[in-house]
Amino acid sequence: MEFLIDFFSGYGYFAVFFVLLACGFGLPIPEDVTLVSGGVISGLGYTNVHIMLVVSMIGVLAGDSTMYWLGRIYGKKILRFRLIKPLVRGGRLSAVRKMFDKYGNRLLFTARFLPGLRAVVYLVSGITNRVNYARFVFVDFCAAIISVPIWVYLGDFGASNLDWVEEQMHKGQAIIYVILVAVIAFVAWKIYKMKKKKKVKINEAN
Image 1 (cartoon, one colour):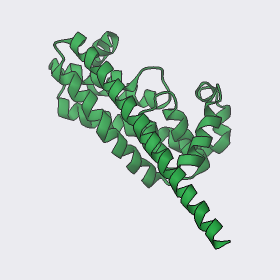
Image 2 (image 1 turned 60 degrees about the vertical axis):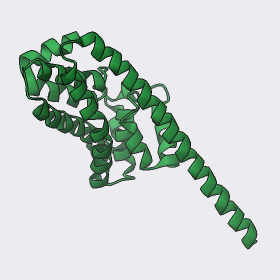
Image 3 (image 1 turned 90 degrees about the vertical axis):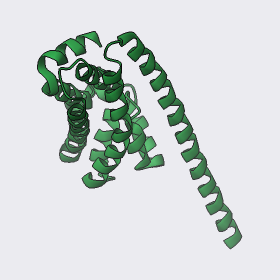
């Protein structure tokens, strides 16, 4: 995080936007660390935190949208691109496709909190054309407006104490994962109940 803070301090909003855009392509830099670092330089007086929030939101949505449109325009051909191959290795593509078939658009929302699969989910959503861009960006925005402000304002608030910020980040990440698991479990339970109810109706009809 110290490296990002130094980098952002020198180049401001543009640097934050650029790194977030690159994160959308699967750059191995945690998005939450990038957002917190952007908030830190605001707390140190290099930028305005509210403008930083807007820039961060635009950067996040632009990165995600780029992956969507790459999949939408090139289709499965994009999977042969050298920069894309590392994202879909290790069975990730197959796993995401199965998740998409099972959870549909709900996966788009939870993808914001799945760093290892986020870029692949957005890519597959474009390839399969299961969702139009208006709905994609709306769902992505609804997820981003939850996480992005939290990280940016956390960095701004604790700019003078990075150890405290890192401690809160770890706590926040743990809470997010617990909530995510709970949401996934709830959705799976609802789907199971719907299928069970449908099966009962079919049996009664017969």
